[in-house]
Image (cartoon, rainbow, N blue to C red; front, side, top):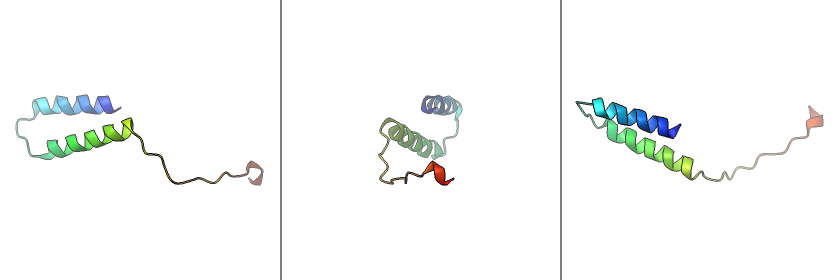
Length: 55
């Protein structure tokens, strides 16, 4: 998914004749998403185990 978004971003940048600064923000977000996907954080939230027979 990340690689598709990155390729789409690069394709749009090839056609962007009037850069507005939004491209830099978008690239920063893409890099942040890529970093999260490569190194997911371990969740500190523990989920309770429910008893199936109670339902």
